[in-house]
Image (cartoon, rainbow, N blue to C red):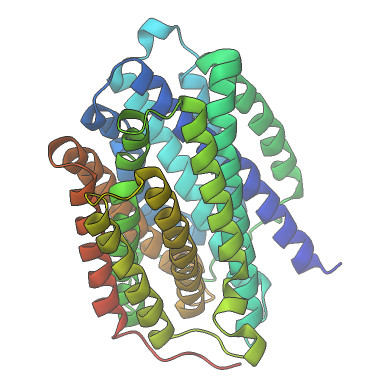
Length: 399
């Protein structure tokens, strides 16, 4: 086993462990506070700081990673997640909205430090002339992460029913502390540290393709979270009378399937024929995705079995979105410069976090005021913006 492959496995294992707790925490907070009687908009507000601090962290974290090394930023991210989980171990009467928002803010910082570090590291572990290998490694990292986030959703829903909110949080904090200690020992020193000292203004991308791709990513992930994060779980609970465990299980299986498709994206988009994706692959897959939420919004008021319709369309949306996401994750790492890679990747995932923040807020507001159909129409409009922006991306790179 090569040294690069060993480091890839350490980075991936680190990312996996973090993701399990991140997915479980999301489901724990959502279901626990819904059970306490919080409105959709109040629940959405709990995640505002999670997404907002993700925006700030990606921008600042890319600069920090280039200065001190990605091994350090990844380990800092793990430690902050342990701290965020520990904040939720206070007595139940302390779990008021501002306190939970503060814990979610810390978790948002942790998540995006960890993600930025993991994605940037892959650029440095793959030879510059092997675009298809880069695409494959990025797809495996991204897909396996999302599959495990789905497992985390299931674990969150399951633990909430079995050992309660605080018991679940304590178990996750303890397990993540062990992973953090292992990471301190195994992760290579100075991974991703740039040969120059980046200035603060270097955080903003000067690359046209990266700016375009970042804007496209903002609308892509805003479109997903517009209906998936708040509106969908609450619709399942309120309109279809699903139980907490049923919602957690369904969303877990959806995310797991989504992650598996992400891992296979290189084969779906032409790896066997030696092709790597570029402009027209991004346009085509985004356009296919754009149609799905709008069609579902049109069909929902019609006399179809709502559960069957919703589940079927969700599976289709998940598969097509997974290819879009994996394709974008490859393109940003491909476009990024090797020296100071975290600056470009951090800027890109800042846009990703901004899209999620906008999507989360709109999801709570639109669902509460206009219902699920409005969320779906807005989702299609966001994806249409992604299609238009993708038309101006560079052509595909060759091996």
